[in-house]
Length: 212
Image (cartoon, rainbow, N blue to C red):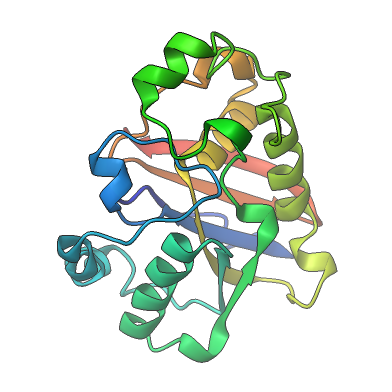
């Protein structure tokens, strides 16, 4: 996965909105090797370091008030690169609620090996990976985080850039589309994916895929 870009383009006439734009972390060395990471980390590819400049055109006309990243290294570095391009390094923070799923004992293993030894992998939302967590838990913490944004230190009517991971994005997408989570766990998040999230009074009121 490289960038999954989320933004909203409407609802400017509504009051008390949180307008969220989100991207996924840049591609890493372990991504290229088809290794499952979850909550372990991996260095970004050197070619990834230039990607924010190439994609800056999608964000340059949006005035961001905050940038919030997963606290995993690959996401936080991605966030810093974007914050630097947007001159918002002073508005950058992080949250463990945006972390990728914890695959437990299957982290740092080849995908084919995991698929062979763990049939529940990306098939059972309730399956708790040994020493890890379930996709259902990931969905609950991600949605709760978004719903609670304006109950923390974030004021109303703000544009917020979120940096997270493909697994988290899938769970949010399923929630908004009212899809069965099991049916989308193995859906590929394309590099050209664009969508939007809008919050009103701490409630998730709109989600739409704009380009997939």
